[in-house]
Length: 389
Ligand SMILES: Cc1cc2nc3c(=O)[nH]c(=O)nc-3n(C[C@H](O)[C@H](O)[C@H](O)COP(=O)(O)O)c2cc1C
Image (cartoon, rainbow, N blue to C red; front, top):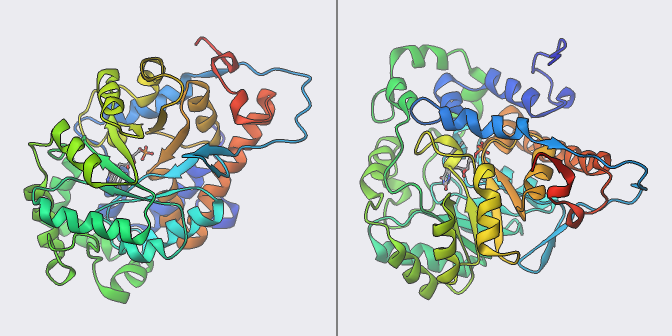
C-alpha cells in the first residue's frame, strides 16, 4: 500500500485507522504500545483476525440509485447511527487521561453504544452521566457479594446491558507483559528509558494523578488500595477458573436488563446461551489475547447464525480496522460489530479528538462501502453481496 509521506504526526491529516495507529505509537511508551497491540503466544489468532477480512471479496451491483443512504440499525428495539459499538477495554487511562470518559463521549456523539470494561479507570456512574448508550462488561470474580454490589450500581446508573466476558477464566499467555516488567507493574530498565522519550504521555497521564487506578471494583479493590502493583496481582487471583453455565443462570436471575455473553466461538455455546435467556452474544476471541490458534469470529459467524436463527443478536469483534469490515460482517450475518483497538488508536493518538476521528473514519468508510456495493440500507446486506460465500 502507498504510505505516502504521512508520518503519523498530524491528527487532522489521518486518512485511516493505520494513520491514527502510527500517531498513537509515536506518543505511547513501549509498554503501553505493547499492552494495546499485543496478542497471546505466537499471535497467530491476532494476525488471522485481520487476514480473514482481507480475503473477503465484495460483489458490487451497478446502476443502482444510491443518493439516499442510511447506515442506521436497530439494537434492542432502538436505533443506532451505524452498526458499531466500542468494545470493552481495561485500563484505558494508560492511553489517555480519563480515556473511558473520552471514548464514551465519542460514542455518544456518534450515536452508538459504549461497552465499559469492568477494569476501567473511570467510575461507571461518570460514564452513565454522559448519557451514552451504556453497556457494562463484567468479569465474574470469585466474591459474589462484592459482584452483586457492582451489578446493583450498574442497575442504579441505568446501564442498558451487562456484557459477561466468558473467555478469561484464566488470563492468556501475553509474553510482552512478562518481558516489560521485572516484577508486577515494575517496568524493567529498557522500558524506563523508553518512557523518558515520551514526555507528552508523561504530561498527560502521570502528571495529573499518577498511574490510573481501577474505579469499578467496589469492595474487591477500593481505589485507595488499587495501586498498580495490587491491581496486577488482583486480576490473577480473582479470575474465577470455576466459571460455568450455572453462573450465567445466576446472573440472568439477578439482572433485570439485557444480558450479552462475550467470548463465544462454538455454535453449541451460542445455542446454550440462547436457551438460558441471554439476549445476545459477542462472537469473540478477545482480540487474539486469550487462546491462540482459534478461528476468527468471522470464520464461525455463518455457522452460528444458522444455529441460532435470524432473530438472535449476534455481535462480532476482532481485527476490524475499516468501515468496509463492518459491511463484510453484516453480509455474513452479524447485527453489530465492535472493536477494541480501532477506537483506542484514535484515543491514544489524540485523546477526545482522536477518539472522535476514529469513529468518524469508520462511519464514513462504511457509508462509502455501502454505496459502492450498490446498497442504500444495512438490511439489504447479505451473502449475495459477496463473492465466494
Ligand atoms: C488493550 C485491550 C484491553 C482489553 N480489555 C478487555 C476487558 O477489560 N474486558 C473484555 O471483555 N475484553 C477486553 N479486551 C478485548 C476487547 O473487548 C475485544 O474483544 C478485542 O479488542 C477485539 O479485537 P480488536 O482489538 O482487534 O478489535 C481488551 C482488548 C484490548 C486490545
